[in-house]
Image 1 (cartoon, rainbow, N blue to C red):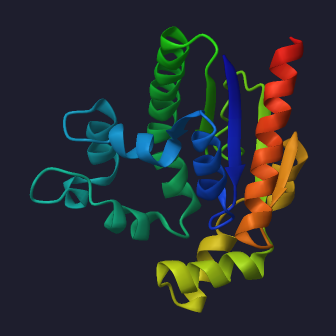
Image 2: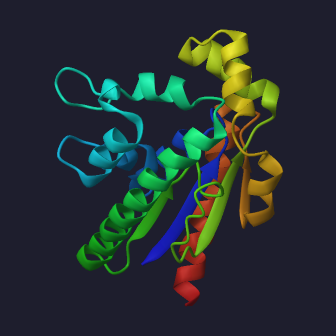
Image 3: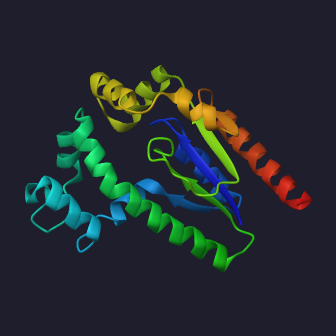
Length: 203
């Protein structure tokens, strides 16, 4: 199995690159999706969140009100650290099981694990390659405004709340520049896939 860690700032093109790699045959795991799974009703993580933050962050149907909790912890480093201490280990455990399952089903699988917080969450799976999508701050803000409907101040706050991109670039094996056209991003993803195929053929 070949394991790729795909990371990058918000609105930096991770999903576009992941989709392209899946079109080439990769298996895609999305850490954001896993983070929602580990806090579903009945999970230990949800119980721990209620114990830590209170039942007021549950909706009437017993599901986590992620938006309300997000607003509560935004700008509060201590509260965010307490939440991360609950969610990150649960996501690591689930992702580890899913990566092992993908390998068991296909020992030669290429797995792309899309992890926005790879640096912040100290994700330590044995990656064969770490790929970072990179776009300037102005491009990230523009995309959040135009594609996700945020106002400019919200968009800037979301971008600035994340780790500085230089920390991601320091751990990158491959950097994909997503500031240009969609075709330019796709061609870089295609080149990455070709590189992986060649590496594995030589192994």
